[in-house]
Image 1 (cartoon, helix red, strand yellow):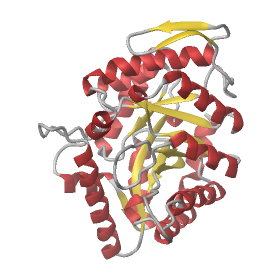
Image 2: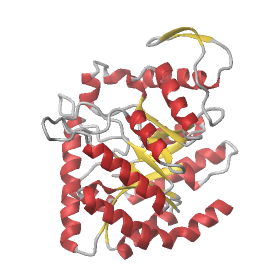
Image 3: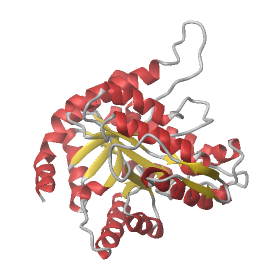
Length: 348
């Protein structure tokens, strides 16, 4: 089992002595330390118009991080294709992949937050069609050795050649967020890697991996557990009171984010993991909070159902030095317990 990071940073508006860049700088230092501690990669969100400063220019932030690191893989979770010019995006992603030596994990998705579609004046009903057209252009932009034109429903390009080339061939590693059986099988059939959300229950994670594995093998390819990134919120503490307080912070953050995904008619789209049911139960069932032993038991259960790459999200810790200490304990007291599993998977 390998471990990576999943998360965001905050750059709030400020004036006077308030430093808007402080949250981004803390995020960079957190990831630089994570590389030194042995984490495999990091995945960063993309969100807009939140009012609380979530990362919006993901590739820009990862480019800065790429210059500060040497081995850490640099992931997007996810770039929402329906609202990006695919040619500009192909150029920016290839630039990052080239400069980082092929370390880009290019995670893509269709989007789910109503406030973002409304803000960009893009109908949510067009998300699927825009996604498919943008992906078609992206892949062609990365792989075409000749100039080409594209005249689609949403995008038109005339006699173009996209530069620079990416370091990885034929294109950067592509990951895709998905939750339903149909969408998960679709990811496998495209030959992409799969990202699973942090609120999916362990049982749902097991089912998702089973669908993905079956679809991969049906194409005559070998399933590798590292083809699936499973996000889990984590917080290492020996105090029940601290654990419960962190769980409560995570729940409040979840409810705040769900408001951004709520349509005017009250319909809520909870993201690709589509975690439904009692919010408190979903919160407790999906997080790995507690002592190193408690966290290890939860990770062992995930390993038994085929999870090989766990992306830990420390947002529930409250961030700052408390989050840094939690990550250090995870690396020191939990990760070594799974080192043999990672070696065995690599050997296989």
